[in-house]
Length: 288
Length: 274
Image (cartoon, rainbow over all chains, first blue to last red; front, side, top):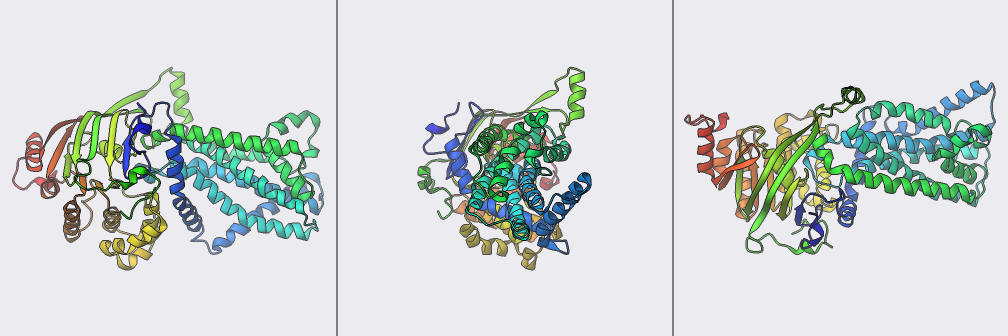
């Protein structure tokens, strides 16, 4: 049935000639799909920009919340650790906590916003034909745009606690890229799942909370006792936050093992998430 | 054509002139079947209850059944039928929003749609921002949207409201902007689903004129409407859909008369009472 490729230059999403047919294996022709996705990149950026702007437009402090939120969150968790341990862990720990927390938030907001992206995109989906992958990608882009100001917050902490500025800091760029890619793959999973299972967004806050507590954020990875190590190793955030910690806090090149594991998680998740999403996306319009 | 979004597409050299290809739309043996779980919102509770009863409630809704037709370039064609006849499903499938279950839809030209639920407008954004977003979603570049913006704003006659959040709009203003966006995309094929009811009489006349202007340029319009007067006034031909099938296709007056007879509404001047 899938004769799209034989059509005279036609595909579903671009140009002046379109053929719509049932897809043989549930996937659209990937080449034309990604070309159409690329052609909508300005739409992606505009959507993220306007959404971000609209969220704080009626608060007194407005865009300042993009800085205030992470700062206050950092203070909350630092206080929590202080109370539970019955004392401080030093200023370096504060830097570790802030950095890991912000990086974790990049993933967790991608996942939770992603879950709402398709179901919340109702009218847009019912009235316009475009590659639906735009929707979870927009959630990720928006989360990334929220993440950027937190880097400035961290930079202040980094200097204030007297951590050195070394070349190894540059490792943070590819590591954050991997974290973002991983978040995108995870967002595609939650976006698709939410269409079929509307309780997901009710579960997600608890799930991400547990994920936060089991990731090396409120503690160092070295603190984890041996019997609990397997849990740590199963957590995709462990190699990513671990690498980031090596590069930024300890000022060293991250071990190869952690980098390789991060890469594997990111690539595996984005490929699986993309295929899962694309194979289901034609159903979205009839399930909303 | 200044609207081309993907210039690397070889088919993009296609020009919508009546003699390049006879058809604007070609539908072959199209069937659209929804398989839908009965509960509107699939939740854990409902799933557990169903599993407990060992039920699997999947209902098949055959919205469009084995439909074939062609629409030549330059035609304005109306689609009539009672609620649930499959008109909107057909239109959404032709727009590439719903997937066909069987058969094939071919579209020769750039499509602009104005569907029943309104454009993907976001209430907290201004009219202007929504126009930009809508244009980008349809696959235009920022420059192309900017080039069309003046014409859209002028046609919608919303004045300063273009700078206001759309949640402050009346439904008529909403409809005017939606129509203005759809028609100013300069489409080869314009698909309209029951969207002419908003707006005052003057704007309606203006919309009709603009649509006639499009057909004058050999553009094609597919108009789904319960407003039988609009169908008579605007359309050359009409399709009457009933239970997912095409039960009649003829010139607009003939189809509207037959449809009205079917509805037993052959009263004088009752075209728009339906």
